[in-house]
Each structure stands twice: as C-alpha cells, then as structure tokens.
Length: 196
Figure: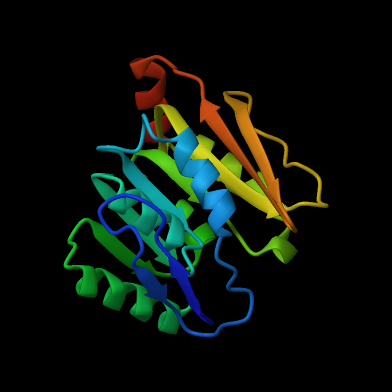
C-alpha cells in the first residue's frame, strides 16, 4: 500500500502507519526493521528512545509497540509530523512525543539522555558522522546506549566516536543498517559530559 508501512511486532503488530508523500521520506524496509528489533529485543523494553529524522515514525513506533517507555520523534516537515501525531492519537498512546524541527538544531539544545537512538537521515546529506559526534559530545546517550545508523548501501561507513563500537550490520537492497553500542563509562564522566 502506497505511503504506508506496517508495524512488525509487539502490541500493534500488523497495524499500518500512513504518512504523506514527501520527497526523501524513505521508511526503513520491513526486513531491516525486523532484523534491528531482533537485535534489540532484550534492550527495548522500558528504554527511552530518540527517533531523529523520524519520517513515517516506523522505527520509533516499532519501539513503542515492543514496550519502550518513551520515544521522542524529531521531524522537520510539518505535514509529516502532523501525520505522526495523528498516528499516536489513533493508537491512543501517550509515550510518543513529536517535535517539529531540525535534527541538528535539536542536538545543539539542552540534552536529555536516551538508551536507544535511531539515526536515519536523508542519504544525500552525507552528515552521519557529524550526527554521531553531536550525540556523543552533547551528552545525549546513557552509558551503554545503542545507536542504529542507516545509510546508502554503496556509501562509506561513517567514522564513529571512540567510545562507540559496531556490534551488528545488515543490508537490504540500497540500505545498509548498523547497530553500535556506546561503551559503558563512569557516571562521573557522564555527568561532566552532560555539563558541556
């Protein structure tokens, strides 16, 4: 079905999410999402999640469907954000929060820590490495947080912050997905990072 994507697992399994037709809006393929959430199955329950470049919201909604405590969706296109708010209202869920705005501007704001981040910017931007640095240096991640990175299959993998370690990778058609984990750091160091 055009302009819709299906939730794969959890409480809303099989539900369809509809979204407006907008250039560069490219939901993560079903196969990649299924693989990603198999990787995260022991982590996602009770997690605080951030869905940057949310688009259809497929990743963040999948997380909520599978028991995440909260998902913050950041989407710059007002029509897409409005559709996402409508989806959350239809699902009767108050754990999702939609922020209309630019992801880079959001990451330059006051941080709040997340356990899982979904990072799926438009492929043409080529700024994945910059986003990773902003997440790490800005104090947005809990110790041991997971970050999912999605990029064009033919592109180069981004340079990762020193505290991040790639744990899994998958590929489907034109899409390459990679799950990385932030190595556990001391609480004192995390507090210092959060103050910057």
